[in-house]
Length: 575
Ligand SMILES: Nc1ncnc2c1ncn2[C@@H]1O[C@H](COP(=O)(O)OP(=O)(O)OP(=O)(O)O)[C@@H](O)[C@H]1O
Image (spheres, rainbow, N blue to C red):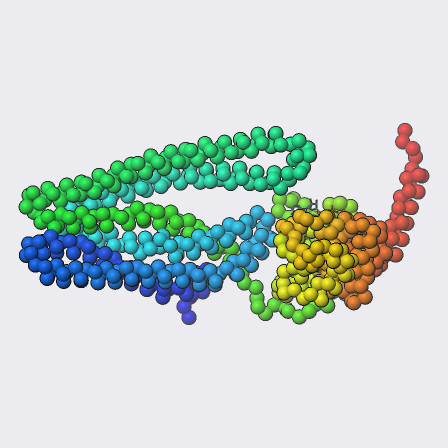
């Protein structure tokens, strides 16, 4: 057994699969870099051998050889790029689904984690591994070899090249270090200004109606100006550095030729050697620029790699042996305490509750008492929970989420519809089962309404369901929750936007679910909901105040109210 194998992270294990490709890229890079000496050798041969001997045959032979070597070099370069691009595509195919799931879970659990950044991380790693970034790393070891050849041509040429390399490296490095911070700051300022603008655009109607445009524009302008100043500062610095860098690069070319000429005058080198030395020097110095550019993407990719590695570690692949059978829908909560980030006090402070299959439980309580949180906890989508939430006697976390989803129906308070057709939304964007979609719509009392839309079930809806009214969105959300008759149905104030007909359809749908043995939790402020309740649960400040069969709880509440009224009347008047 190799212990180090166990230490390898999931991401490293995936990358390790590409070792053969990278070895090949290394071999091809070696070949290409060796053959890059071809023009130099050719030049030496032409100047010193062909011109001296005046032999056309030698010229032809040397030229053909050079052409063949250059063709091999280009092929090697092309092959290594192809290899890397294909490796990149494979890497994407291997990781993107896994990263998608992990980032989704992370978003659900830590509201501050941006799923978009996680995907940029994957793209950044892929781009580095398949782009010029990694090629520069493969080419970099050749700079010393070129320098060695220059030393062989003449030690003075070699020394000059090392000096130029150091100056160039120092300048680019210094420039990079100086410009990173201003560029980052400018980027952040731009992000902030655009995020501010987008946020306001989303609420354009309120802004217009309440005459808030003037003050908002002033606020936006302040952010925008900050960005403009920072961008200008970053640009000025970049331009200064690039002017210096150009000066040094051009001077270096001329001075290299001058050094060669000095050696030729002194009789220490042939003119061919002078020209060849010049070409070789620029070749030796070229990777330095590239390397510093590559270093930037390398450090970016390394940071992205660490973030992604951490994410995949925190959200490991779900155990494939998770439970996959259709649940009966028995829910039990045992000592559930739910908290949220940034809250000193828990939201739910120890909840014990049973929801037997085939019953309808109506949950009531004042605003902020924790009803919606309780609903989320039951569905297993509230992360910070202690205690137990059991479905058919097993912790909800022990169920395969993808499989479980189709057995759950959930209508949250804020109905989020997605961009797509009505049918797609009702069918939860899975394969559309038309009969199932129509049945769900009928149960939600929506079918006739949909038929009146010009495109019926194919009516497209924008992001957030923009073209629909609040009541329509809520009913589509209800149809989506009812799709394929799930075992557990959790409805969070499903009637807040419904008219009488809508509410009647909702209550009918709930009765139907009950008749088919489904478990329903209905959160509602409206007394009409009580008509369908088997059990009533009253919450207050994160606790269950009363729970039991509906009539018993209603009676107990009425008695308590009556007692309170009597004791209030009997109490001596103040003063
Ligand atoms: N993500 C969150 N982070 C921090 N606190 C939260 C979060 N979600 C809810 N809360 C807090 O938890 C408490 C209970 O909220 P919850 O939405 O569960 O109440 P509710 O009874 O459903 O209220 P309403 O009837 O108004 O919908 C509230 O004080 C709320 O501010």
